[in-house]
Image (tube, rainbow over all chains, first blue to last red; front, top):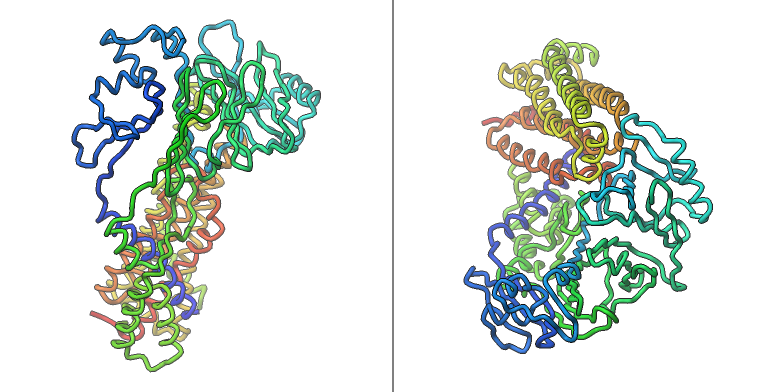
Length: 408
Length: 223
């Protein structure tokens, strides 16, 4: 039994060091990074770039071809983004590419959509608020009930009584039966808050992968099946509820396709974008009435795509590698054979994961092994071999606990 | 003999164990009473909305309480053993060292598990009055790693207290602090669900390390 607890102690110590040492190293070598903001400018037909340097000096304005701009010039080439500044300076044009514009219209048509993997890689409680989408009041109101999906169908629970609302449940179940919704639902997206201008309820896909729009209109269920192209399998749904009301939602499919579900006709339009996988990729969309800039963030790189706001076809693309490996990163690769993490910026789960395997660490591991064999007084060859093997594979993570145990 | 050791440990720690149970139940009651008052003042829908739209479980007050219960129980059980050199006497009893040490550790674990179970039963009964089953399970699953931290804290404190060498004891404190930190790395509700299957058994195994310290004590390791 003692041997078991001894091995457990060594194992836990190795795991703890594999977590702590890389963390400590990164913490010690942490330095500010340069940040860039990239957005497509129709005025110059190129990507406009703001560089915030690591040294915190004034930002630099340029475009992809290398031309530099003053701040005022930069405002002018991005009128949809800096319209308030242009309005204040009296420089906001009244037409842009044949479209009459004013600040109100620009504000209405502009939108920002942000997706980070951590938004979906988390555990949500499967109780949902269903707001009244067409109440007689100007402001939206939170309901006094929540709904859930059970084996029998949708079910509304009165929050004050903590009891099922039988009449409302029966009314909404009828709608679900009529539309032949197959439970359990696989994906659902809604934005149950009163801090928005209108409510579109929820978009969900059922067990057979069919897409539905579900909301409450004057106390009655509104449930509409949205036909999808054959073979399209929904990976994720993102309800939008943008001020412009041109779209109901964005969708992604299992093959990396990204789509806009247009309002009011529920037509599906593919956005020309590199494959997007919501579980692992970040996506930011800066949209205006003329074009959208999509920033697709992957582990090592960032892709910028400008698409036309009407056709959603590509205008320009640009890819950029994330942080280049510097000398501290190179040294890191020589010191640690891997690192153990329990958290990740991509999700909200606590789970062990081994990252950053490095073959270069074998040299340091061998050095540690030689040191260990040199100072070891063990006579037991089996133990010595096991310890040696552990140090050769796990490097410094095994070396420290084994040295401490050797000292007794 | 095991019964006698259990009895000896009970005599030694009964007031601390009873106080820990009462204080922890007091914390549980206060957390629930706060929820009840909030529902009374703000209305149930407001509280449900807070639970469903924010990353909170409303019993955050209990977060570090189990950790302190585990720590205090272990200190009460093992500090007198070391300070008054009672452990040496205990280990001279005509029973195998592992049986004696195992019984002491098992006693502490049973007391702690009883307190944890008591807390959970009261919490579940109280919460189900106000919330749907989904919310009750969300709150309890979020609290489970906190209680696992209590069990781990007990084991790691026992391991540290029974260690006969001071330098080594400091190392144990360092290891224990970082291990316990892992139970509180992510504050989001249900973040630990996927890892509970190994966290809970591991927390119950930590007290076994105390046997290693006792072995070193028996071998005559000291400052």
